Length: 388
Ligand SMILES: Cc1ncc(COP(=O)(O)O)c(C=O)c1O
Image 1 (cartoon, helix red, strand yellow):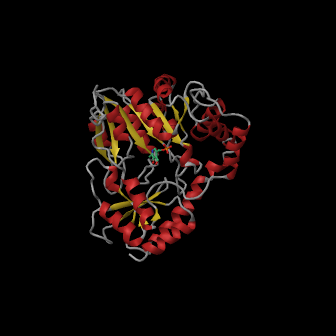
Image 2: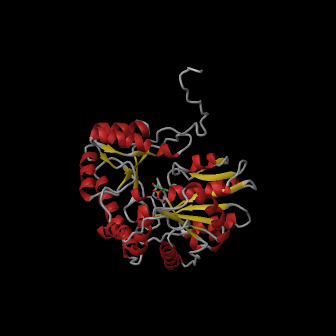
Image 3: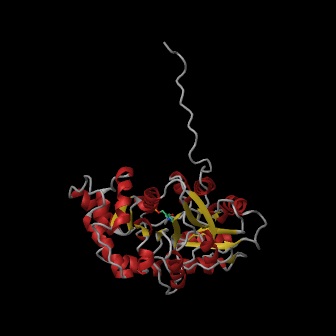
């Protein structure tokens, strides 16, 4: 008989660089200190009660069992109709649209479906924190290309220099988290030209597609035939309908790419919860909620930017998304991360350092605030920041 103490076998980590994210660190600190949390990107207001009622109705009607693997047909139809109306490209809801458990699952599923060991994948830094671990889990090699420091515009010479026959995919995010830049039509055309002679796929993270300001238009990859033909276009109902906790999104991609995507999707989540899908399908019949979203968030952005004029921060442009970046140089000599901890603890407002979105922790004295908050929350934050 073996009476040795049971022992959990050692596991060599697959993701040595991954620890607790700065978002969790800052949210925990904000809660501890009673700070206004403008760090993590989520609304502090509720969604349309009609949407909640639609979920209740679906559950009451007994729509509680597995939906089709690819998503409820009515929701795939609604997504295809929306993309056609907004961007003029027709996707076949049966073969080219898949409902996912948020954009996060959509992105990792696309990466796992197409990236093999030895493949290179380009990310444009600063970038959303799931991209790099996703590529590493697939065995791919991460190729980091910086957006231009200061303006956060794409640097096409550097992208061109990074592209080579091993480049399986490039991840692009517009409107952009964290910098709040929005790619122009000219920039999308440049990308299309660069990728045209290659076999590189595009994973186009468009979760903030309905938050673009000052009359500018979101340039979806769906608008550009040469991009759409090679793209997994990812969006998130969480962002669009103020329901980040529901974790439902979608992917639109040509049939051959969708077929590969679904092979992985089938065995990592299989499908996404039924009543929310039915609710979203009926709610999408009215385009007004997403058509009014730019004006809704532009008001919040303007209120926040107006308030920031009372501080010594240099306020950077915010063209889209629900983020506002500021340069802290005139306020503090601390590094970004230390500044954010100090700001949370001493001033009572949480922000996120941009260095968290770079592999090498590049510090340019810029921090990110999220303005997806009630007016009163933004006003309280401004009152506190005005003391700086
Ligand atoms: C750029 C970007 N991509 C993807 C996501 C994830 O979206 P979801 O909550 O639908 O998984 C986020 C959420 O913050 C994001 O900012």
